[in-house]
Image (cartoon, rainbow, N blue to C red):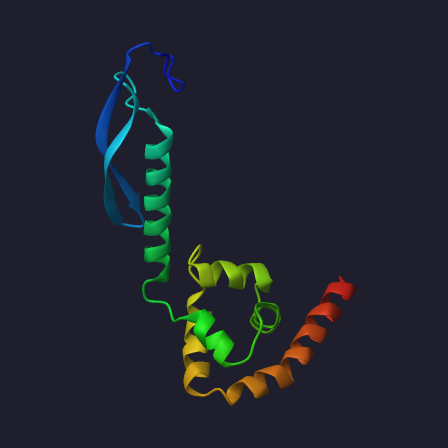
Length: 146
């Protein structure tokens, strides 16, 4: 088999342990089988090994991104907010909140701090709601003036 990366014909089927690194954290996925290139060390994993590798990588990303962040989903639901309303009130939109809650990306530090405060003082949400329309109108005026 020819290597897809470098074109070498020096590939062979083998089983290896492969590390995955993300933001300074690392895990090793054991027993991954596939075609490995002797020249560039690239690999084409067998389907089952590929699935395990991807699942392990996704798990690592989720774990690292969730570490040290508040449970936004729990707090949002406790406050009676939908993802759409949270996105409108705090910025980023529904897509961002969905990604924060799934652990795909880490929420901004200011948002995490605000949610921790709202978790302890849910009555402050009403003040945010009262001021949000003013903030949104101000942004619209600025956009139309430009």
